[in-house]
Structure formats: structure tokens, C-alpha cells
Amino acid sequence: MSVQTRPQFPLFPCFFIPQLVISVFLAYRFSLFWRIAAFTALTANVIFGLSCTTGDAFQDYFMGSGVMGMFMSTIHLLFLTNPEKDFKHESDSQPVQTLSVPRRLIWGLSIASSPRNVGWNTEIVNLPPKPTTRRWRFVLDSLLRAAWSFFLVDVTQSYLHTNPIFSLSGPAAVSVKSQGYFWRCVNILAQGASSYGMMNLQYSLLCASLVALSISEPRHCPNLFGSWADSYTIRRFWGRTWHQNMRAFLTSFGKYTTRMLGLKPRTSASSYTQLYVAFALSAAIHSLGGDRMLGLEYLGCSVPFFMSQAIAITFEDMVIAVVQRRGVKVPPTLAHLVGYIWVFVWFSVSMPWLLDLWLRAGCGLSELLPVQPLRTYVLQNSTSG
Image 1 (cartoon, rainbow, N blue to C red):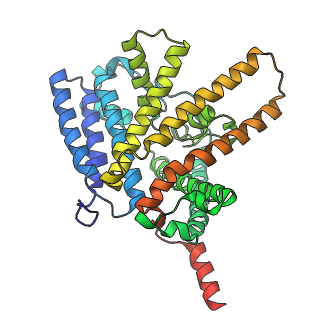
Image 2 (cartoon, helix red, strand yellow):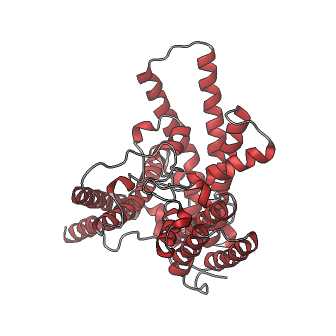
Image 3 (cartoon, rainbow, N blue to C red):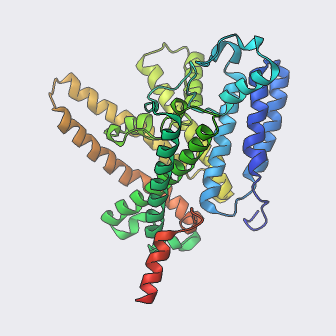
């Protein structure tokens, strides 16, 4: 089915209705039969959603990945947890079974809509520091962060849309490596910063709105991304700096797998099993979701990038272990410097495996912002000049 003949992506049925359904099943522990019935209906909803299109390749990839991420979270919440026993919010003053129907449904919706479980006893590790500012100060800070993110996206999109390789797609597309190593790195940084800025922009506006309306509190809205200073290993980049919206259910699947295999907790076998399960699921999410929405011909193209990250982490762990066993004393500053160089070089090698897919699918033609002040200004001045 071509993009032109695919139906328009239904945002509300694909994202909001599943959350409402899941919240009901979290609030009330239905029997396995009804959970399977609900899961079957939600699976059909996912299959339909992935056959649709937003009309924009870049949005298709991220919407598809988001739909599949929610699908994996649904499996985690419906079958791998017992909500009444496993989840407790910091504000819970009584057992969930004793709450009124509306409060119980809100309790379930809070779990379903909090991928990082902020404020819950299941809160993910390595969460960025929680804001301690007052309500309206937080709103102002979030709006300023949104403005900065908008500027970042505008700058990077201006570059991407003036670089000729990002205007090519399909058989005519060329690799981000085609312009030499220096421009390859610039292209990777520009595309990465554009995605980073767009996610930060949306998250900052959401947090500002929720806190301004007193739906949430500042301490429940930590930054989406961690500190870039933490990224001196590939493991720390994925585990601390990059967003952790999938960490809760990836950890759940990993631990479930180790239990099924009979592996002892806190052993190397358990740790690396969880690592590879996490990246295998991440590869599946981006491939079955993102690649699928780009087109069936792209299915599986995201797998090499995500699976290679687990291999790179295994390699760097081995190197670190050898250095430590030999008693080599490396000053922390030098170790971090070498680490930053290693991370930079690794992503300059591995990112083209993903970005080249995006270019072939036409993601380079996407407009992420409704207006582009910087590019408009530059074009107007170049025309007048």
C-alpha cells in the first residue's frame, strides 16, 4: 500500500484510548481471560495504526515507534505486574482497593501515563534530579527550555534543509557519509540535535501545561534527558543521558527473561541477558513500529543500529575490566576524555546505519516546526542580496 493510499494516522485511538483502557485494567485486577481479550483488541488497534500514515516520513517513524513502545508497555502492565501489589505512589495514604471509583481510575491512569514511574515506588534508576522550584517558576523555566529547544530545532533544520543530501530520497538517496568524515559528523550532530530538541520542546510544553493547571507538581516533571557530561561510555549514554521513557518495561522484560532462564540476580549472565533483551526489544519497537510505518520495504532496517549498541557496550565493559584487573591507574579527567572520544567515534560509525534509512525514506524532507524564523530570515536576506 503506497503512502498516498494509506489512511490518515488516528492519533486519539492509537495513543489515548489504549491508555484509558489500560488504566481501567490497572485500577481493577480483571481475570486473565479479560486481560487477554483487552490485549487482543489493543493489538488489532496497533496493527491498524501502523498501516496508516501521518503524511510525513519523520513523524511516521516516531509515531510508529511510539505505538509499538506503548504496545510493549501494555504487555508489561497487563501480564508482568500485579498493580495492587507492585505499585504505590508517594501520595497514597490508603490501599488502592479502598479508593472511590473515580480516584481508582485516576490512580490507574497515573501509572499508564508515567513511563518513567516518577513518584512511584517503581521509579526508574538514574532519573534526572527532580525540580524543587515553586510552581510558576517551574512553568517559566519549562517555557524557556521550550523556547531554547525551538531555537535548536530551527537552527538544525535550517542546516539540514540547505544540505542537498537531505533533499534526496528513495533510489536517489546518498549516505550521510558521502560528504567526508567531517561533514558526516556535522550531519549526525545536526540530525541528532534536531530530534533531541523536538522531543525536549514537546515535553517542556507538556510539563508547563500540567503544572500550570495543577494537574502535576514540579517534582514529578524531571528533565526528559540526563546530563551530557555523563556520556563518557556508551552504557552511560543510553542509561543516563538519553531519555528513559522505555526503561521501565524494558527492565521488566529483562528481569522476566532472567527468571525464566533461572539466572541468579546481580551476576554477569543476568546483567548481559537483560542488556541484550533491552536492545533487542528496542530494535523490535523501532523496526516493527518505525520502519513499518515508513513502509514494508524498510522493515528491519533499524535492527543493526540498536543491536550494535549492546555489542559496543559489551566491548567497552571488557576493555574497562582489563584495565582494572591490570591495576592501571588512569586519572579520572583523562579517562573521561578518552571516553568522550570513544563515544563520539562510535556514534560517527553507527549512526549512519539509522540515518541512511531515514534519508531513503524521505525523513530529510520533513518539516518539524510549523514556522522556521531563522530559515525564513536567511532566505529573505539572501534573496534581497
